[in-house]
Length: 400
Ligand SMILES: Cc1ncc(COP(=O)(O)O)c(C=O)c1O
Image: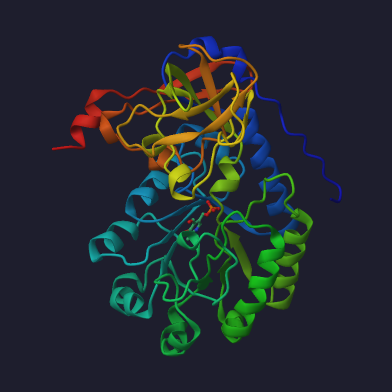
């Protein structure tokens, strides 16, 4: 990569592990800053504006830092937009709030109008319905399209699967061109953990089906799913793609709205071994639940990395130090994964599940009455702040 050198900071979590006595998500400020500096490099080199997708990362106690780098937030509805307005915009009054929903209600639009910059519709029906409310305000209207191309697997994360409800397909778009005079921007979101070569291919489809409308637009939003802060991500290609796109389309404004790339590898979930039993393998029961604390592990599915252990297949790799790690819930499949540790485990041992800050906290639930993990920040200067602890009331209030 040209003229840039970002060195990932080392985790300092072990130095404060003794201060943690319950399940806790620990955000490491230095690692978040590392991600933000990479994202800012992309902004500065390409002129694109990067918005934080709150659906993936809404840890607002860190927004004093995030708002120093990113241009605003992108929201999935009124609650996320409010959070962005209250907790992001307060640090930077020029930050922008974009909102997309597959279908808004009238009440939501009324609440969104005073706090949003872009309201992005999923259909021309919705746009026509709410145009009288929005027209004349300062809010830009956007429309999400489906370019009929996405490389995302598994299908649950692919917005372009056959019959997808997300985005206007080219033939339907033609039926809405009478509204285009009110539309300031086009949005597509077709990526998930993708490198920039996928964006290059996607843009070809975007231009093929929607190219004639781009010159009428003030901005184009390339959505999220760009894994910009991952080690092997080709940042130079991303910058070239954006610069070439802007050159081709009269310097149109380009937005990116990553969530995962902001929170990527910037913190852990700390748990503990509660019991060790034996049935075919060593089974360690922890105080962490995949179903309640990291549902993507079951949904995606994937097995999280654990510090000091490697992921193994217990059917071919049983040893004294290999364990199946499970949760304290009643769900038989609430298993974290199979691991070979560098030592035998004991009851009370701490475990560090890596990369647990994005798409975890935002998806937490209190299934089985399992407590919600605390939220903590390990500051760059070594200070350790527990910013939130949860209790029985979170469970009770959500159930009746
Ligand atoms: C419309 C939209 N924008 C942005 C994102 C953020 O994607 P990621 O967190 O993968 O970058 C998503 C994720 O689903 C999305 O649906």
